[in-house]
Length: 351
Image (cartoon, rainbow, N blue to C red; front, side):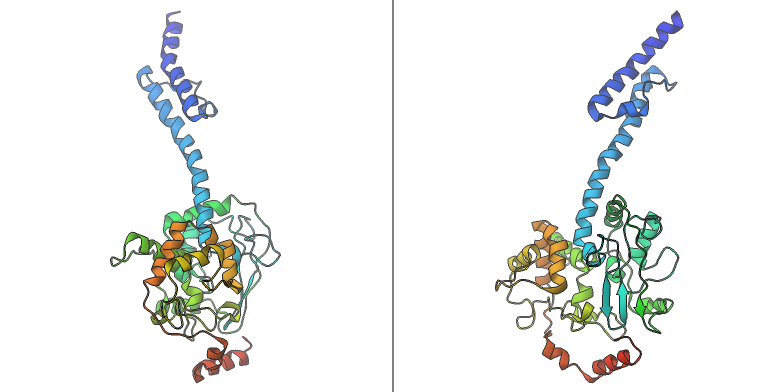
């Protein structure tokens, strides 16, 4: 009888803790707190609270992480690149024609066989930070890891959390159509030695927090320079012409100059004009963006906060003006070595 009374008294603080947890978190019952932990009555309730709170906190944090990952995925433009016309979202297969051949974007749904469902956090971070596949092979820089290397680990893993809660799509990846010798992945090791600088992004002391936020969105997550910066004959971005426009953009598009040059860039635009374009796709002269940029707005930048769009605008206006006219006429007037390069690529069957 005495032992029964003692047990009843010892269970009182534990039962009180259980009721409190249920009221506070609504989930303690699932952890079996009706059972004795074998601890003293003084510490039993406190220990129960700690053990119950941790899983509940993780459960409440997970939706926040996924929502943040969805936001970052839009900021990164992943949807438009990794979705083929008429295909399942993020299941890959979209063609990207370049001077080196045609690359096809991969399936990034959580399918374990054809997507990234078997990837660990380490695999995901290594792909973005170092441009290396889970099997150790190099990615081609058509995958913009030279920019994605700047993405913070926290942001990268938030994107992964969002991707991994999507419905898996079983769709095998299509092989790239890239001619010899550019199809040799081991050559990318040499390319990296010449042109790749590993991240993450480092804020500049010359800018305030807002401009640095814009720098992060443009240079890393949004990878704007991958399209808006001209490239050298080996496909690396010409840093001295950063964001100055590209005569040879993906799918042979003419990609405009984003520097504040008054004649060939955005020098006549103010920050509100840039932010409005990112939100609605409308230019100051009431035109609408076309081509890839229309998709960037529709699938990406229109989902950003006003603060992030303003940060991007401020960063772009803070760049050094670079005079670089991007037009069909300018493409026809390219120097002899670029025309020779085009001829050489055609000779070996790339274009």
